[in-house]
Length: 317
Ligand code: ADP
Ligand code: MG
Image (cartoon, rainbow, N blue to C red; front, side, top):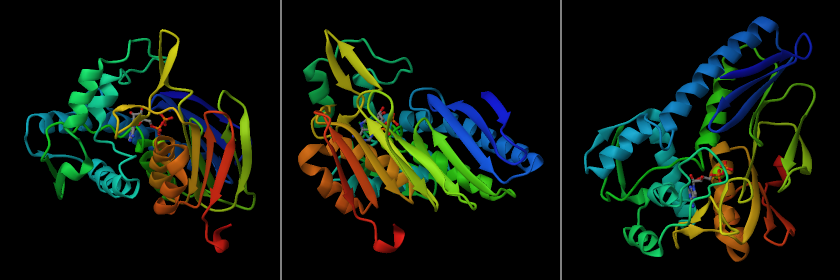
């Protein structure tokens, strides 16, 4: 899983782990080699555990929970999954259902429970989509008591791919914070969390659709910068592309927004928020960004126009 570890200087270093279908890069500054090695070892084990626990279609804690839900059973799950359920319920409500990780069965029906992109399967029969849609899976259906979860709706299938990286980077920063580390940043395939800052700001690039850099920002405080798009992971059949982000209201892939970036100190909000803004579409994304109270959002529509919305308190800028 450890792809490379290269020392840049005595005190600055970087290491990459392959998890969540992407590369997660950790950068440490002003940190001695022994402290760096200890931090990297802990982060590696943490990422591997989260990867297994939250995998949407390979055996692990989330699949166990989904099987129990399908069978109508109550099930004891993990603290991470409970944290994701709690956060997701608030986010589903605040986004008018645009972010809804209970639609895992729909994601699977569209063929996105696979690791090789693009997907080349034909889209599902409309009747199958509508049948799942009619069962209205929602995180509202879940009852949580400590670690014990049950669902009033057997059609719920949890797929946390739209928020799991947010939890992962939060956990990575927490783990790094336990070590004697000067400054740290995590980059999960273009989704970034600045954990801590030393005497130099971090420079974070926001990717542009199709490659390149849309904007580079200087970050002076702990902050998450997450981007979702419909151009990188998609299906293609008969020359038609379909996105891996679905509108839970229609059960079908979205197409109005090519890419959305959310910047906020809370990485779960930034991750889920970026997915939600892609779903919200050109008419609704500002409203959803407002109701989520994210600091800043940037959206690129299907025609390539860039718009941004700044809702940060003056003090945070
Ligand atoms: P990325 O894969 O680029 O990190 P996202 O964070 O936007 O993208 O997550 C997209 C994933 O979230 C999809 O692959 C799917 O598993 C899941 N998903 C799709 N539509 C939704 C939705 N409306 N709400 C929550 N999760 C979704
Ligand atoms: Mg997301």
